[in-house]
Image (cartoon, rainbow, N blue to C red; front, side, top):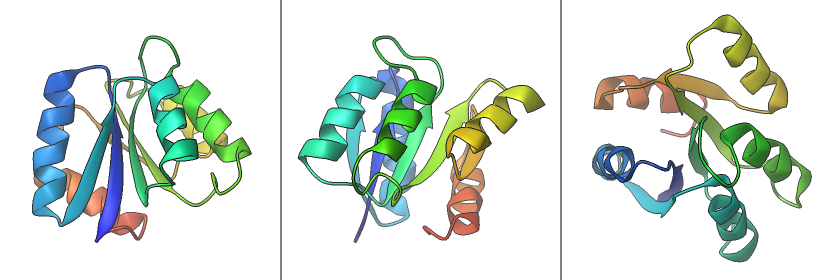
Length: 122
């Protein structure tokens, strides 16, 4: 079974994402910010997919992504940014930093599933 780490400071978003991902046969872990997510990845092992929020306290999504891609094995997880930031500059910056795909909030099961298929994780 594939694993997905949902990184978002919103408990509601994490809960919604967990529900959707579990219907897609993922084992789901959660982190409330980038620092907790990085600790999880380096301590508990790399997930197959990271669903990543952009704006978070402690460590933002971009800071987490750059740090993740620098650690051993950090190039393996597929990273899908989940964000309300929909301008092309944000999207380009995310892809350049190592994101594989992005999805706009709010998202539904169909949208998330298609993005996971695009990155080869579904």
